[in-house]
Length: 111
Length: 114
Image (cartoon, rainbow over all chains, first blue to last red; front, side, top):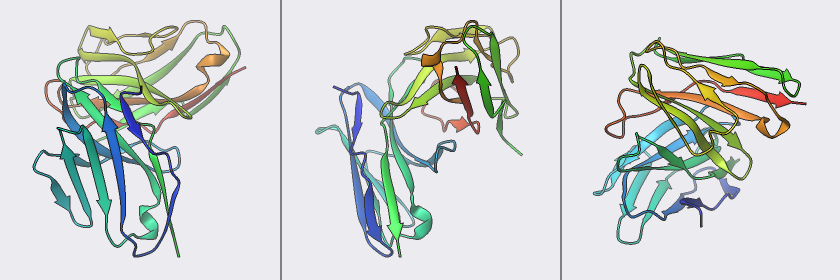
């Protein structure tokens, strides 16, 4: 079983739609959680950290469920510019700040 | 401008010819690491460094070497490249290894070994 699992997609949605991605992680010792965005094989960039209480940044909402070991990302009012691959990232306690990446979920927002 | 710089961006080489991919950051970050990205496998950590002269293996270190003689530089060395090392490589840095600080990535090096 992969340490971090995501549905690869693609998710094809119309502009203005709300779309949600889920990610599950296998190691209960995981400490920190993030969503990174990657455009067309360019470098990944931090989209947002995920906190236990849930957090929101504009149209983006991230939530963490430690009991079920999953993380979610909700994007409201999708824009064409949201088209990218979204990487779920988990950091374990210790281990030298090793980030474990999911394989990513591909989103295509269409007119 | 705060950044992580990798060179070269693209490289085609032949099996067995030693090569070095350079990585430099200007943010005074303690922690640096190398990843490779392959279709269906995501990013996998090759090596990491928690500070100058401190390096350790990641998940897929075989066939690679690194060094950290200065804080800003973290080169990746392939002593004898093989075709299975054809991949997209990213260098990353973050302020510290202790907490979940944001990782900043270089623009990537697309390596092809023939």
